[in-house]
Image (cartoon, rainbow, N blue to C red; front, side):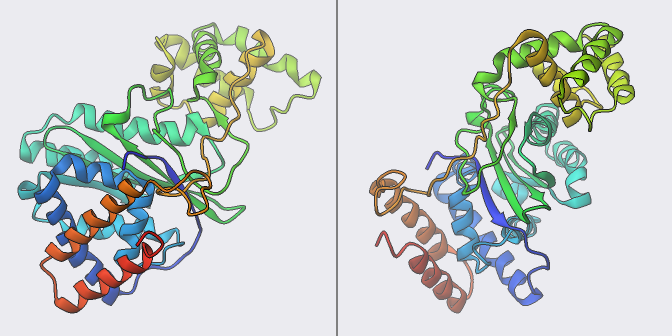
Length: 354
């Protein structure tokens, strides 16, 4: 099941009741244990990075299938569930919701020091994946949740979520290290959800010219760039949310750093959505090279649709997904009632395929 990407969910508040969360912790622990034992750590990362397998896991654990809270609650249950078993499993989970998400690098460093893992590429991947989805990909969703799952060998997966307060929806982003060839060029293998927005997509392949020109502008004398920025104001171009004085301050920093490429530019502290938006607009106005405004999300299903939309059901992959989840549940060392209920939910969720 190779897809990784995003899912869009209604934005709900509240939290799982204690009686439910404790059972989610117990069952998720055993499912993780069974998958790692049967298929290995890398396969667990692949499955967590698939937005639909992750959604199915939430359903099996008995959380609301369409709630934004599924993301935060399931990752919270996984993190709590494997606590104390990290060395045995070879799996480590850092980050979480809100303030906890900002502690991700610190938690990676703690695990790395304890288990002799090189933390530098892991911390970089955590920070860059968040920077891409919050700054280079401007789709109207502000990140508030970031979880970084990694192995002793340095492989990793990211599950993060942003919210759009205006339409009250949340969008979940998935990353998988083995599929990332370039952090700033189509880093998501596939992005699947049911809503599209006008999106400044600086990580699209077709934004290559805009990326290169943004770097070129960032390397120029700030006074020259600011002069170009003010000119479009006479042509009804909307720069109302870009403050020239703040923009100049950031440009001074980029001018001093002289970034080699777009990834280096994006990694500079202080370079945020407004800076990237201004540079992309200038690349279009000065050089006639517009960025992509294509929302990378595309409507899809985990394995296709029964009516052939958007593509026919891949029965082999579908059956394998069911079997993996079923084996994990049957191998779980939990009470018989919880196991039976989980299998019932699995059968209900996949009844179309059975």
